[in-house]
Image (cartoon, rainbow, N blue to C red; front, top):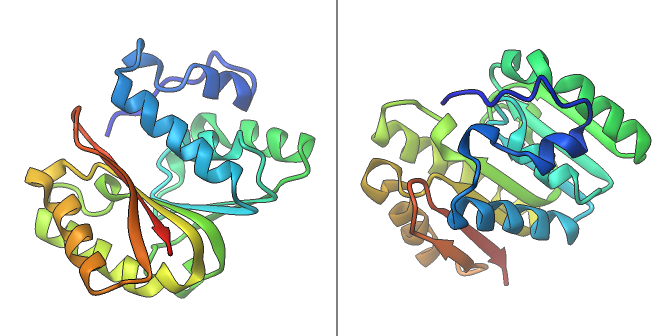
Length: 196
């Protein structure tokens, strides 16, 4: 995953307005994914993301101004490089409780209630489709009960749609969730599931 260059932007709002500057203009599928992130966050008091990398998707969710914004990653160096002060400033100005944790999504420290959870599956186990799917299914089993509204997945088309197909398989045995939106066009794809 290549980091976006947000160094010329002073605020988180500017970063969100110019999200993924290397991809501009955004294709309609990436633009829709960003809209879906913000729509889910706008209906939430608490949002959480696993695999924040530098914080682009988390910034989109934060821009909806939920009360609590939680981001987790096992490596926060990309986040701290250009985005951490922008997030802290935004959270202060909008009275948002911001929590950034250096941990795995499978650590106990990752547990906690939220309304919307975004899982960036591509960030899970790079280059290993079977391990990525296994990790994702473990995340779903560990966290689905603590999510009250939406779970959103990015990169569902990676590895020959292995992620998207396994989410659908998981849904068959977890009837309290259903697909709200699925996008299979473009390079990455995304899916939103909602609690029934």
